Length: 533
View 1: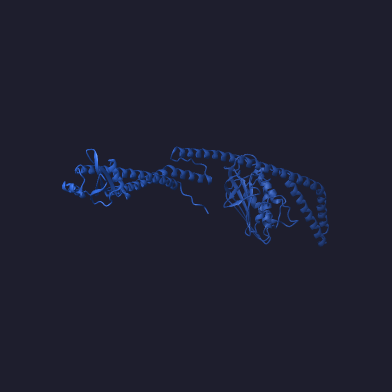
View 2: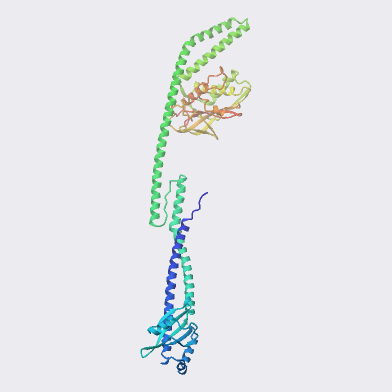
C-alpha cells in the first residue's frame, strides 16, 4: 500500500504556519507583558500622586480626633467616589492603625517598613486585582506615620483583555492573509513549475523526446528547467545515435542474411547442377533408347492389346523420368531469355486452349477475363507460357473433385517494386522472406511503376497457413511421392523474377487460392520501353 505523503504546498504551508504561530505567540506574550507592566506602572504613579495630594492635607498629629475635627476624614470619604478606589489606611509613627476607609487587610509589613524607612512603594496584590501604594507622612522631615492607598485594577484588566482580543484578531487576520499570499506564491513559483516538469517527465517516459520545457519561477526552478532541457537534448541525440546504429546493424544483418541465402542457393544450385548434369548424361541415353524401343514395340504389338498397353505404360513412365531430369536442368541452369513485347491476353487464351485440348480440365470450368487495351510487358513468351502452365496445373491438382478456375488479366496500378511487401487489394500476398529469398532477381531502375496483373484463382481447399511460406521453396511439395518434384513453383518464381516482376499468393483455407503475377509495364506502352531490364 502506498504511504501517504503530503503535497509540497501543504508541507511548506504547515512549516510556515508553525513559524508564524510561534512568532505571534512570542510577540503576543512580550507585548501583553509590556502593556501590563506599563499599565501597572502608570496606575502606581497615579496612586502615588493621589496619595501625596491627600497626605498634604493630613493633620500634624495623627489621632482620630484631629482627623475628624480637621475635616480630613471628609476628604478621605470623598475618595470613595473614585471608580478605582479600593481602600485607605493611616498608621501613626508606631505603625498602629489610626484611620481606615474600606480597608480590610490591616497593617502589613510593608506599611511598617514605610514608617521606619520613610520610603514609599507600590505593590501588586495577590492575583493582580489591586495595586497598593505606600507613602510616609512627613512633618518637618520627620516621619509621623504612613498611609496605604489601594486602587482596583479592574479597568486595567479590562483594557488588557480588550488589547488581547484585538491582538488575537489581528493575529488571525494576519495569519490567514499570510497563508493566502504564501499559497498563491507557492502555487505560481514552485508547485506549477514542478507540475510542468512532472508532466514533461511523464511524456518522456512515454517516449516523447521532442519537447522543450519553459517554466516560470525562481532562479533554481529556471536552472532545473534548463538542466531538464539539456538532458532531453542529450537523450534525443543518444536516441538518434541508437536508431542509426540499429539501422546499420539491421542493414548489416540483412546483407549477411542475403549473402548466406545466396551462398546456400549457390551451393544448392551447384549440387543440383552436378546432379542434373550427371543424371542427364547417365540416364539420358538409355532413357532415349527405352522410349524408342517402347515405341517400336508398340507398333509391332497392334494385335496384342495387353502387351501393347504394357509397352505404352513403359513409354509413359520413361517420359516422366525424362521430364524430371529436364526440370532439374531447368532449375539448375540460368534461363536463356528472348525478351519481346508480348500481348498477354492472346497468350493466356492459347495456353488454356492448349491444356484443355489435352483433356487437362476434366470436370473443371475455366473462365478467362481480360481488360481491353492491356499494355505489353517485356517478357520471354515461352517461359511465361511455362509459368501459366505450371499455375494452371497446380490449380487443377488442388481440385481433384472438380471446380472452377478463373483467370483475370488487368492493370494493378502503381507498384513499389523496391518495397518488402506488396499490397494487393485488401489482402497481403508474400513469398518466403518478403521477396528477399533466393528467387529475387535484379529489377529495373524504376522503383515504382504500373503493373500488369494476372490472377489465377481456383475453388479448391486452399493452402494451409503453415505451408504458405514454403510453397516457393525448391523441392517442397504436398503431393504424394511420384506425383510432383516441388520444382514447378520454384521455376515459375525464378522466371517471373527474371522479368522484373513478382509472383505472390493469397489463400483462404476451404475457399481456394489465388496466384497473382505482377509484371512491370511502361507508362506509354511496349514500344517505348528500354531493352531487357
